[in-house]
Length: 335
Length: 265
Image (tube, rainbow over all chains, first blue to last red; front, side, top):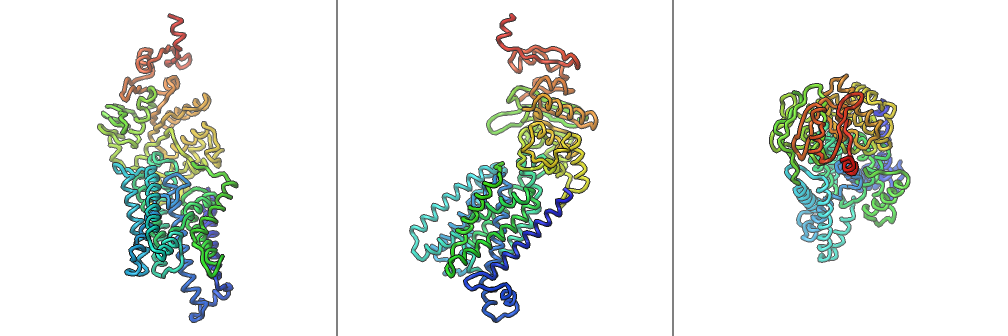
């Protein structure tokens, strides 16, 4: 136990370093490649081409990737802890379905033409909030949030939303259809600094708030009644943690589309590496998720450059393959 | 009275009810709760450990309604070892340290030196200190039960509530766990309320017994008052013989199979 704090410190330092390296790597890579030297040089030469590519195209995209990746993994850790189920991810609860439905409706009704850039994130977040409220109300009885009910309701709401999205896609015009499909598969590009700033703030604040519940999450791993015996205000913690994870997920989805797997795979990997104490798991998953998503996004925009792949496709493939590999290497219990 | 339940009625949605239970436990007492399957033993533990809210009546700890107490303050005084505990991939020491949670200050994030010392002491008292880095799921049932006890002790409680702590254990571990509880009761003055299935163990270890039958208190008193042929036949609807334990001279129950019963009469 004495050496634990320094071990945790080393993990954080290592992951931070990893995030920085991935960031620099991603800044230099793309349809126009730069060496690291050129990237650093572009910081000072404001009128160069390199400067505009690095600062106006790549940097906001990378920062958004960090925030969304970190946020989704954080939401994943929280929900897996809350449900005591390592197969839960932020999207299991129907939040992404709701957001995607909101966006599809927004596109169908040509809101982007009226409201501009802000329309899609706004409709997406609206859809997510509606779903969160619905799932939450349906799973609460006599003031008690029933966790297993929440999971089932969430899965069903997911199905219903994806069916409705298919219905919308079936009746929408071709140019709208392309937009909807691309958005559903996740896309980090084409963002603006305002969105980036918002998401970075939300992700970091989410991380900060989650730490108030780190010990409660540790106790909840023993079951709700056991946590109660340890003096944890279980109902309050459950509700606040669910809301926190939902809001983070909702904002991530509305800013970057549906990027699956980050919130499932990253917490899993880090649990294998750093252990399951949430005091280290929360921060390390956040950093790991940030690095993972930016890495995947870099792949997405370089593999068939100058064309781009949807980043959700890459996270699914890379994450899935890595995960299966890890499962065969190390036993993962479902307890 | 340290712990008191007055006219306690509580239950679940499916209709099971614990009805008008009166219970009082004095400081330093060792009370056993016995009764057939489904008689409400676990429900009673849940009601007095602040899990199940009473429909009527109340539960008092030193005269204060437990539902009006602060959760942390309650957990500092009352530790519970329940039947079902998940432990995931936790290691023994990590798990035992969770018992220190009620003692953490507002924004305390890490264990203090004292927390580590208390946890260490709890592990050595239960005899599992040498296992402290083992993951719980690799341990035997007996070792796990001792670990649960250590976690409860790390809470430094005054009252210990145990729900069938020796179910599924072999005879050596049954005695080891119950001897430990007895020692804590005698040496540390810990008040104990324990649910036991096995009547002979209840008779041997408890000062006083409370017999539940279909959600009501059937009888309460010293083992020799409760564990009589007549009461046991009535509640368990089974033929038994009651003898005296040759060493402790407490009641000793011998079950009689139906075939034997007929053969003798």
